Structures are given as structure tokens and as C-alpha cells.
Length: 176
Image (tube, rainbow, N blue to C red; front, side):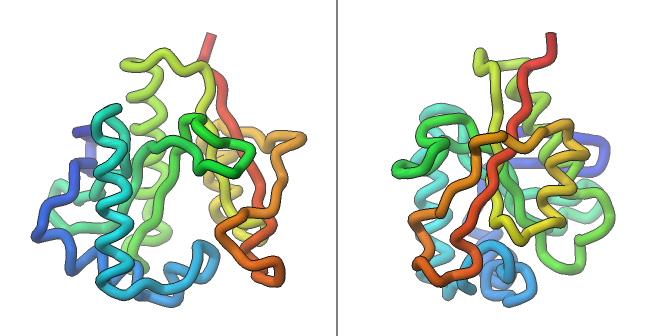
């Protein structure tokens, strides 16, 4: 569990499923992330992240301290096989629409990055997004990440004509 002044990042519980399913089914949330998901696909995402727990990784529910609202999903995982970041430590996030523009994503992601520097030995953390997802790229820059010069690639999870296929990579190095 990771805590900030406003947030608690914790392993998902069964009671979180409805809020997470609603977020992943929202076309506005998914516009730059991938296709909307039904309940079965959402549960598959949760199961995939449970597979990272043995390393103390996996994305977590982002809960607002003041009222327990499930706002999003944020955390760390290994980069996807078949991509240039295969096996590297990757930070990522997504939030339901009512929680956009309030600094929650940057607060949660920064807390994850800080957790890595305090508890793990990795010297670098990466993040990826669709080349067209300028909001996420701006957030990566606010986190102190820099675009990796040779980090652009076509994400194999998307078909060749899919506008989400062109992907950019950002990275942050362990502070000296």
C-alpha cells in the first residue's frame, strides 16, 4: 500500500470491481488507451496485475482518503513482452472522468516513483503511451520523465492501422 496526503493506493478488492468496470467501459477514458472493456475483459486486467504481486508490483486501486471513492488504477508493472520495454519497470495510470484535472494522477504516479526509489534497486522507470496522447506525455514530463530518443515503436497490441499503435516511451533515472 502506498499513501499520500489525499490518496491510498492499494490492492483491488472485490468491492472495487463495479467502479473499475465503469471506468474501463467509458469511451472517454479509453480514447487514448485502447478499446472499451466489458466486465470479463476488465476482470482479466485485474487478474493480469495480480500476476505481478509476487514482485510487490501490479497496478493498484487509487482510493480518495476523504470518502473512500475508487478513482482510478495506478502502479508499476514489468514492460510487456515483445516491446522495447520488455521486463523494465513501468509506471502507469488511468482515472475515471470525474477525477480528471485535480492532480490525482500526478500525485499517485509520483508516489509510485518515490516508492521505487525508497524500496527497490532499479535505476530507471519507464512509461509508455500512444503518440497522440499528449495529456499523458505532459504528465510524464511533470513527473520529471524525459522522452527516450530511440523509444518510439509500434505497439504490437494494436493493429497496424490503429491510431493507438504508434507509441512513445518516457523514462526517469534514479536521483543521484
